[in-house]
Length: 246
Image 1 (spheres, rainbow, N blue to C red):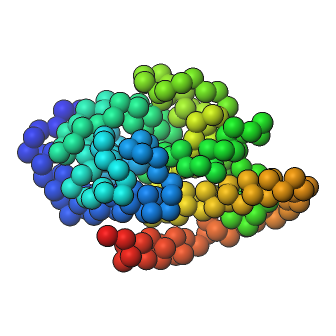
Image 2 (spheres, one colour):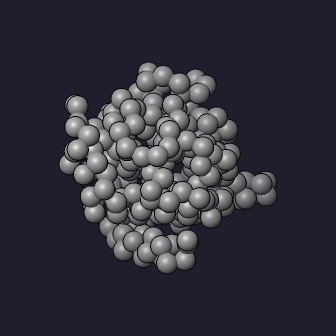
């Protein structure tokens, strides 16, 4: 869809979109603070309210720890920058546009965070969701994309990744990294943070060489339902990050 310059300017500067830009920038700074960033690579994005063909994205070339609301760019489903002072990195457009469009996800967080990525290198390719309590919150919410095809430099690869999600909130991409999705930035970031924590303790437990002892699947599913049924803790965590991170 073609949008007029006046519409784009009004949209980008509106209070609702300004708040989304601030939330996305905060999530990026938080990820840097928590050791989930990797240079100037990887991206977070969120759809605009009532516009499923427009989304906000962190720009090319900035460290996550320095991103502020005014650095966030607005792009369309074809990856064309509509507003913002920075440029867009190509792989971000291909992956995020496809996940928004095909998987119908509102907020999409893609990282190469170390412990989650370490599990994508294993035979299982991802997290065991019946081990730690943090892992159990993801029971029934994870997809595995074991097919690594190199950098996502075309729309076909982004579409393949989006289709591999099959509706899941989280996808472990073999030999690559993870994508975590949510309906809100604060909820998605909370899931990203605790996913890495769950992966970290699993990697540490595996490093002991001792036998791992998961709970039964029914209990893991119950813990997942409990976590998903009460997201106030996620919102309080994000509010705390807002108070403590510049």
